Image 1 (cartoon, rainbow, N blue to C red):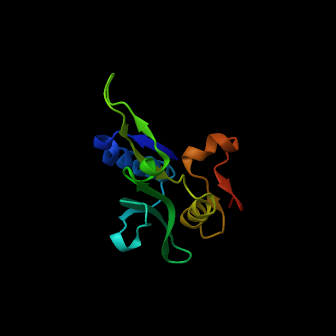
Image 2: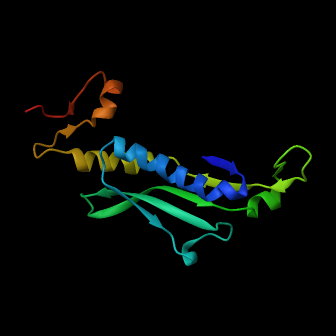
Image 3: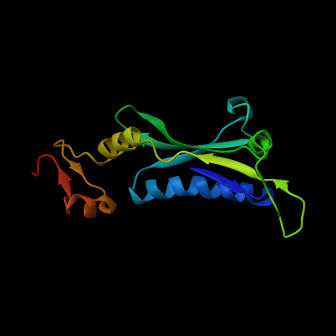
Length: 142
């Protein structure tokens, strides 16, 4: 996901990107956490970054499933991306943001590992059941 924002709204826009990823994990009823990355872990272009991680009990670790960054005006200056704050005003550089959707393989791993029963069957998260024809369990039923 790529987003352009007015400078005074870019921090709120970053929060919204992170929350959108978290909302999907909440709907799937998966344990997750949001980690703010330290300056040393940021790319040359990023000013602020959050990773969204989901718990995978099978490997006993948190797996990054989304990464959301605010580049402020760095990319806009390089690409000359500007907007007019109001009619007749001088053009100004916008802020650019990037947020990955959820990494599908890691999200599926988290669903399987967090929703697996002792008999090996996987309980389908409620939110996904309409897309699977109402299927509630994948695997042995008993």
